[in-house]
Length: 301
Ligand code: SF4
Image 1 (cartoon, helix red, strand yellow):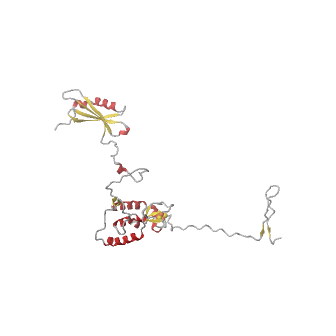
Image 2 (cartoon, rainbow, N blue to C red):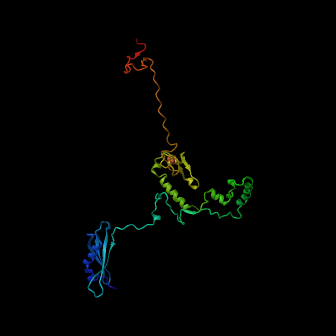
Image 3 (cartoon, rainbow, N blue to C red):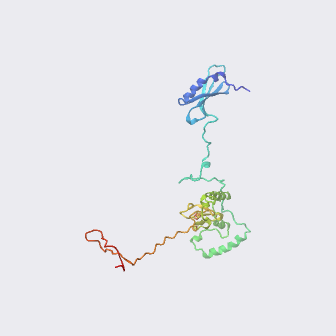
C-alpha cells in the first residue's frame, strides 16, 4: 500500500496555495493554514480557514501538484469546502413533505397521490349484486311497477337512477358513490386532529360549564363520525364552524348560563303633603324661572 505522506515539495508550497486562495476569496477572508492532505502521489491539498462570517467552519482547499522528477509545484484548483463543523443548509426536502396545514392559498392546486393512505376506492359502478341476492331480485319487480306507474316522460324522475335496493343506491345513500372516499386510516387521522384541536383535553373544554353534546348550537354530522363529533354553529363560540368533539364545550353553551334579568325600576314616590309651584312658561324678560318661594306644606298654615 502506498504511503499517504504528503509530497515534501508540494507540502512546502503553502505560499503558492495561500496566494491562490486569496485570489479566489474576498480580501482578508483567508485565515490560518490548517492542514496539508495528500490526495495522491505528488498531489497535496492545503486547507486554510475561511473568515467569511456566513461560512463558519468552511475551509479554502487549494490543491497543488508536481510532475514526476520535476521540482516545480503547480496549482491545480482552489475551492471552498465545508469542514467537519461547517454550518450547512438543511437537507433538501420535497415540497410535498414540506407542506403544512394552512399553506394553500387561492388558486393553488394540491395533487393527491394515487396511493394516498387517507383515501380508498369508492363505488366504481361496475359492481353488481350477486346473482342469488334475494333483496336485489325481489326489489327489481317492485321498482319496475313503480316506475311504470309514476314516472312521466321528460320529468326529472325519468333520469336514470340507481334501482332501489341495489348496491349503487346504497352506495349513493352512504356517500360512497365517488371515485375515492375516506379510508379508515384517513378517518382516524381526521378524528385525532379534531379531538386534539377541539376535544375534552383543551383548556376551553376543561373550564366549560357543559359539553357540546347538550348544546343547542351543535349540528350533527352524517356517518360514523357523528358518534363523536358535530359542528358548532354559534357565531360567538371559539369553535364556530369547526368540527368539535361531543366532549368539548365552551362558555357559550346554549343552556349553561342564564341571561341576567333587567333591573326592576323603583316604584314612583308620590308625596301628597308638599306643594311644588311649577312655572308653565318662561318669564317675559328672558330670565330664568324664579323660584316662587319655599314649598308649602299642606295643613301647616
Ligand atoms: S357553543 Fe360551545 S358548547 Fe355549544 S356547540 Fe359550540 S363549542 Fe360546543
